[in-house]
Length: 121
Image 1 (cartoon, one colour):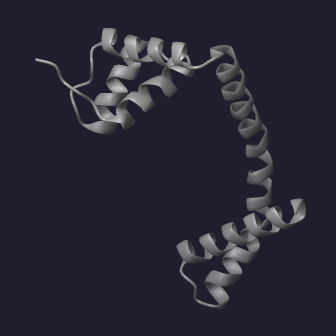
Image 2 (cartoon, one colour):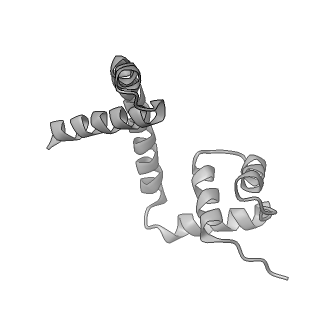
Protein backbone atom coordinates (compact mmCIF):
# COMPACT_ATOMS: atom_id res chain seq x y z
CA UNK A 1 0.00 0.00 0.00
CA UNK A 2 1.50 3.27 -1.09
CA UNK A 3 1.36 6.26 1.25
CA UNK A 4 1.53 9.81 0.03
CA UNK A 5 2.86 12.71 2.01
CA UNK A 6 2.03 16.38 1.93
CA UNK A 7 4.24 18.67 -0.08
CA UNK A 8 5.27 20.42 3.15
CA UNK A 9 6.79 17.18 4.44
CA UNK A 10 8.77 16.68 1.23
CA UNK A 11 9.97 20.27 1.23
CA UNK A 12 10.98 20.04 4.88
CA UNK A 13 12.96 16.84 4.24
CA UNK A 14 14.82 18.39 1.30
CA UNK A 15 15.67 21.60 3.18
CA UNK A 16 16.88 19.73 6.24
CA UNK A 17 19.02 17.40 4.14
CA UNK A 18 20.65 20.42 2.48
CA UNK A 19 21.59 21.48 6.00
CA UNK A 20 23.56 18.19 6.13
CA UNK A 21 21.44 16.64 8.85
CA UNK A 22 21.52 12.83 9.09
CA UNK A 23 18.52 10.90 7.82
CA UNK A 24 17.67 9.50 11.26
CA UNK A 25 17.50 13.01 12.73
CA UNK A 26 15.29 14.22 9.86
CA UNK A 27 13.07 11.22 10.41
CA UNK A 28 12.58 12.03 14.10
CA UNK A 29 12.03 15.73 13.37
CA UNK A 30 9.31 14.88 10.84
CA UNK A 31 7.64 12.73 13.48
CA UNK A 32 7.76 15.59 16.02
CA UNK A 33 6.91 18.49 13.73
CA UNK A 34 4.13 16.97 11.63
CA UNK A 35 2.83 14.38 14.09
CA UNK A 36 2.87 11.59 11.50
CA UNK A 37 4.76 8.39 10.97
CA UNK A 38 7.69 9.58 8.87
CA UNK A 39 8.48 8.22 5.43
CA UNK A 40 11.22 5.66 5.17
CA UNK A 41 14.75 6.84 4.64
CA UNK A 42 14.71 5.31 1.18
CA UNK A 43 11.68 7.41 0.22
CA UNK A 44 13.29 10.57 1.61
CA UNK A 45 16.47 9.80 -0.32
CA UNK A 46 14.47 9.44 -3.52
CA UNK A 47 12.83 12.83 -2.92
CA UNK A 48 16.20 14.44 -2.36
CA UNK A 49 17.70 12.76 -5.43
CA UNK A 50 14.72 13.76 -7.58
CA UNK A 51 15.05 17.35 -6.42
CA UNK A 52 18.76 17.44 -7.18
CA UNK A 53 18.25 16.07 -10.68
CA UNK A 54 15.29 18.36 -11.38
CA UNK A 55 17.38 21.52 -11.04
CA UNK A 56 19.72 22.51 -13.82
CA UNK A 57 22.64 23.03 -11.51
CA UNK A 58 22.30 21.58 -8.00
CA UNK A 59 25.63 23.11 -7.01
CA UNK A 60 24.12 26.51 -7.78
CA UNK A 61 21.23 25.75 -5.45
CA UNK A 62 23.68 24.71 -2.75
CA UNK A 63 25.70 27.88 -3.28
CA UNK A 64 22.62 30.08 -2.94
CA UNK A 65 21.45 28.20 0.16
CA UNK A 66 24.88 28.65 1.74
CA UNK A 67 25.02 32.34 0.81
CA UNK A 68 21.59 33.02 2.29
CA UNK A 69 22.48 31.19 5.50
CA UNK A 70 25.76 33.11 5.84
CA UNK A 71 23.99 36.45 5.24
CA UNK A 72 21.41 35.62 7.90
CA UNK A 73 24.15 34.70 10.36
CA UNK A 74 25.93 38.01 9.69
CA UNK A 75 22.69 39.96 10.21
CA UNK A 76 21.78 38.38 13.56
CA UNK A 77 24.30 40.30 15.70
CA UNK A 78 23.32 43.59 14.06
CA UNK A 79 19.64 42.95 14.70
CA UNK A 80 20.40 41.93 18.27
CA UNK A 81 22.30 45.16 18.97
CA UNK A 82 19.54 47.29 17.44
CA UNK A 83 16.87 45.53 19.48
CA UNK A 84 18.88 45.88 22.70
CA UNK A 85 19.29 49.60 22.01
CA UNK A 86 15.49 49.86 21.97
CA UNK A 87 15.00 48.26 25.39
CA UNK A 88 14.72 51.60 27.26
CA UNK A 89 11.90 52.61 24.90
CA UNK A 90 10.20 49.28 25.56
CA UNK A 91 10.13 49.88 29.30
CA UNK A 92 9.05 53.49 28.80
CA UNK A 93 6.09 52.38 26.68
CA UNK A 94 5.21 49.73 29.22
CA UNK A 95 5.52 51.79 32.40
CA UNK A 96 4.62 55.29 31.29
CA UNK A 97 1.88 54.58 28.77
CA UNK A 98 0.66 51.25 30.22
CA UNK A 99 1.18 49.38 26.95
CA UNK A 100 1.41 45.61 27.48
CA UNK A 101 4.96 44.30 27.09
CA UNK A 102 4.12 42.11 24.11
CA UNK A 103 2.48 44.98 22.23
CA UNK A 104 5.33 47.33 23.09
CA UNK A 105 7.81 44.77 21.82
CA UNK A 106 5.96 44.44 18.53
CA UNK A 107 5.76 48.22 18.16
CA UNK A 108 9.50 48.56 18.65
CA UNK A 109 10.28 45.61 16.39
CA UNK A 110 8.20 47.07 13.59
CA UNK A 111 9.71 50.53 14.05
CA UNK A 112 13.23 49.06 13.84
CA UNK A 113 12.29 47.21 10.66
CA UNK A 114 10.71 50.32 9.21
CA UNK A 115 13.76 52.43 10.01
CA UNK A 116 16.05 49.78 8.53
CA UNK A 117 13.95 49.52 5.37
CA UNK A 118 13.91 53.27 4.73
CA UNK A 119 17.71 53.49 4.82
CA UNK A 120 17.96 51.28 1.72
CA UNK A 121 15.30 52.92 -0.41
